Amino acid sequence: MKRDSKLSSVLHVLLHLAYSDRPMTSEQMAAMLGTNPVLVRRVLAGLRERGYISSERGHGGGWTVTCDLAQVTLRDVYDAVGAPTVFAMGNRNEHSECLVERVVNASLESAFADAEALLVERLGQVSLADLSRDFNGRYDNHLHTRPKHEHD
Image 1 (cartoon, rainbow, N blue to C red):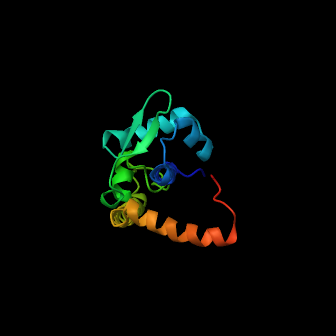
Image 2 (image 1 turned 120 degrees about the vertical axis):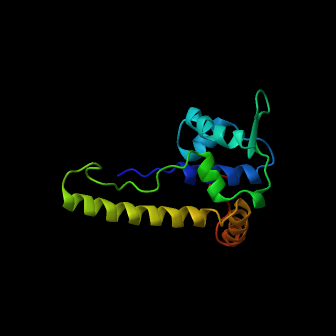
Image 3 (image 1 turned 90 degrees about the vertical axis):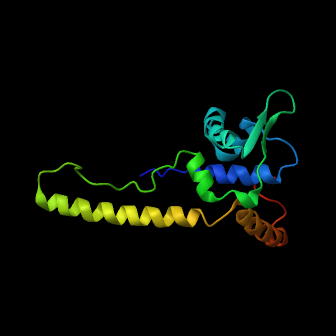
């Protein structure tokens, strides 16, 4: 089963943008993610609408981070990309006449709702600055073991 990697991809791109000394094009980000530039632009549009990033057209243009990383949480980014469904699991039949299936559905719906609420709450506790600090620590250790970062 294919997982929705939109949130992960956007966070990946945001951190690269935060560390870039110049704007990055949709083509550059798409190559990094192994996807199409049009898809990158579509996803980034929600971030631009919220003021987290901006884009400039033309020669030397591209995307840049415009927010304070400490003020934007993973929940904010999750919401900006459309709050993708957390679980691929669901009920077999939402409107069953079978009482057994209704009991199963109610139990699963409750468990799914609780788990999703917990995850979304956790996303609200982690800022982009937290990811940046974690990256800095890993990068420092990485330099001692390898000559360069994968996207360098």
